[in-house]
Image (spheres, rainbow, N blue to C red):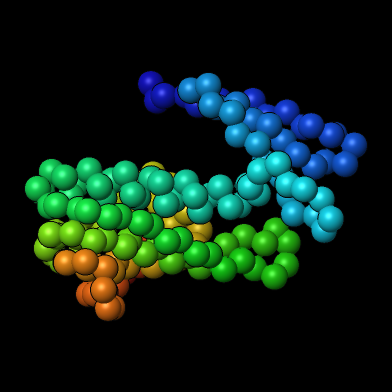
Length: 165
């Protein structure tokens, strides 16, 4: 039987519809809000969290795979950007994920780690790829973070499947 996940979300001000506090199955609290001019936000928007979940999911995969490949990473960042439709429901129409790695890492080891996360292991990537194209890239600096480093497109996942890179 698959593992069940349940979230309890509570409106802070049901009359205006702004502000939601949610508690995850594992007991973590997250506050959400929408951007409204002149109003202080209590947390990120739900769509910001979607991109954040994608970044975290793929980062955990790639870091684990690189560790198993005995690659020495000294710095690792994920930059995720998304373009949204102009009309409601304003879904993401394209997403770019860039892995920024500094260290004694072989480009092929990094490329394969990103590919495995994008096409096999990251459930957030799999769910999003069912509705939007996601470009997965990396930028690697093998010494210190100077200059442009080596960068490459790894793959594009989309509703039609992985396109390769």
